Amino acid sequence: MARQSYRVKFPGGSGDQLAGIIDRPDDHPAGPVLVFSHCFTCNKDLKSTVRLSRAMSEKGVAVLRFDMTGLGGSEGDFSGTSFTTNLADLASAIRFAAAEIGPVTTLLGHSFGGAASLALAGQAAMPDAPAELASLQAIVTLAAPSDTTHLAALLASMNGQIERTGVGDVSIGGFDWTIRREMLQDLRSHHLPELIAQITCPVMLMHSPSDKTVGFDHALRIMSLIQGSPRGDTSVSLLSLGGADHLLAENQADIDFVASTVAAFAHRHFATI
Image (tube, rainbow, N blue to C red; front, side, top):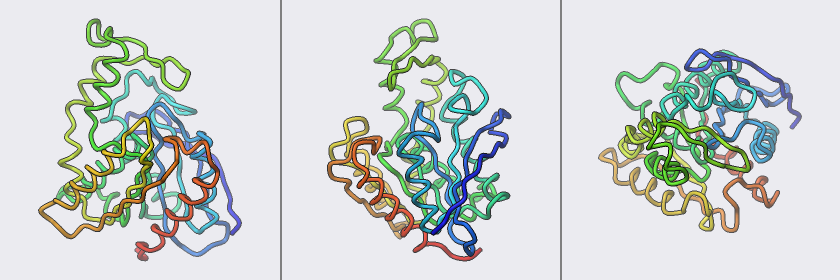
């Protein structure tokens, strides 16, 4: 299926302009609309993100991939961001995609972007949930963590100066990133497991047992939280990506498989709104 891709800009949760790219089927009837959230310190132009988005659009799914505040082509200062601002940016992206393409039916989050997707899916079940979340019909995560506190602990261990003086640099992916104490405090303040237990729409967890960045135990915990929810009827699937690396960078076959599976999942749970 042919696709069209184009760049977009929209205001993020903090007011900064966020950069995005829409990959959508060309001349295709209405179908699933998916918002793709990238991993911590990553961006929309990560090779695997680009390939996944394009492949899904060629399978009938319209995709918005975007840069969180302070990353990639987006405005803002990364050191001033937090999980709270990530959630606000994702909510803004959902609103923009709904206006630009159509109601957002699916969220796909990679690693820490998966945590944000799960959190908003949990909020969608609340009585006072934002209107833009009402259209969500499916959630997919790739190598997502089951909490936000583990990242705070990891960052603190990478540079003790962050806790001692309030700011410090850490090296991630070959780049230095300035981290502030406020980011760690925000990460510790969120209760992601409680939100995960509130999710009502179908969830598919995709995770590699050999992931060296976010352990497979996180996927097992997320699945357990959903299955053990008092609601008891939320559909959750766990798909093991045997041999895949955290960023899906080593094997094109992993990209092809994930794109096909996510697209099929989005179509399966798509209902005309």
